[in-house]
Amino acid sequence: MAEPLDIAAIQAQLRQFVGEREWDRFHTPKNLVMALSGEVGELTELFQWLSEEESWRIMDAAESAQAVRDEIADVLMYLLRIADVLGVDPAPAVQAKMRKNAAKYPVEHWRGKARKYTEPDRSS
Image (cartoon, rainbow, N blue to C red; front, side, top):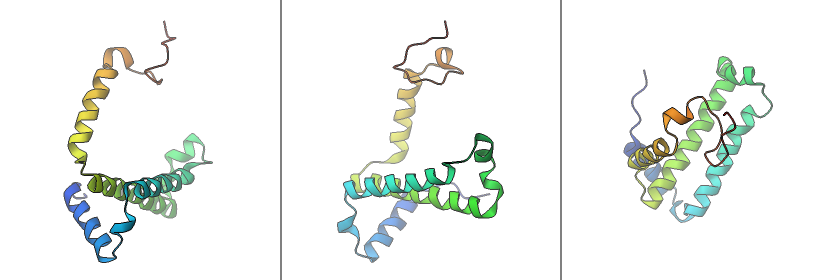
């Protein structure tokens, strides 16, 4: 089983990697967000023309499974780098957002419903 995700350690590794290459001047918030968007696009591209069933089986083939792992890693690394550069601690940010989501989407009203909270409820 994999080690638990140590966000601070990964951010320190990324900081060292970037520092050794003198890339800090390029790692502006704008550039990092653009790079993140590009990596999300690359992850999306792996699924773009798959059927729902095929998308569930993407990890069955070694080559496509590795591509998915690589793109997820790229997305996560850029996201953690942005958080580091902007001084955002991801763990409490996620916890706070989950509390907001729980208040916005109470279980008793939203169970089994897939629509945006701003859309009217047409199930009644």
